[in-house]
Length: 194
Image 1: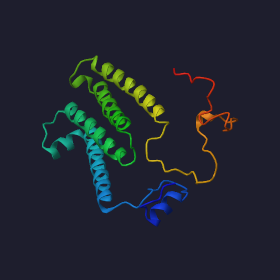
Image 2 (image 1 turned 90 degrees about the vertical axis):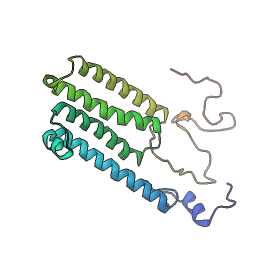
Image 3 (image 1 turned 30 degrees about the horizontal axis):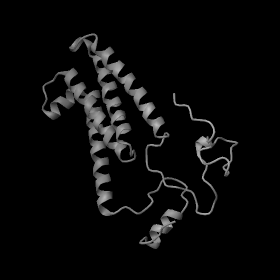
Image 4 (image 1 turned 180 degrees about the horizontal axis):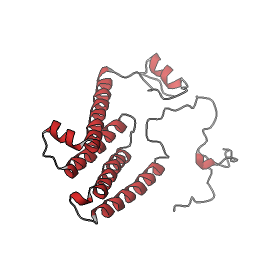
């Protein structure tokens, strides 16, 4: 392992086995500040979205909006989506999965608004179109998470130097690595792509 230029604390952090999530290195002031502001903004937007959805008259008066329940509900749906996106951004590292998850929350809430507020405006087909888009988004999010190996945050390696070969999910439960069977375990059979 290359350790040139690395401090002892960095090497110790790399070699240390962790029982749960922890950053590989201590965060500097700037990183802590960015994460704190992101989380605070996420919580604020989520709270504003929930308030607009559950108490639209109060929210409209407080925000100085006209009292149109459906439009306040829609504003709440989008604020909720923004808040969830910001909150998830603290832990998720995949931008595409993050965007899909935030959009899914906002759009699904928007579809529910159109079903509940049908007598307040919109078209009867709006809820179905929005619901279909949410369904497609769920499928896209599941595909994306599968592409990422269902890992959405940071992963710190637990492999200790000198502990032997690292097995991958492709190796299967009974397969062992050897010179005849290289890493990946599929030297003689091409892997199927569905």
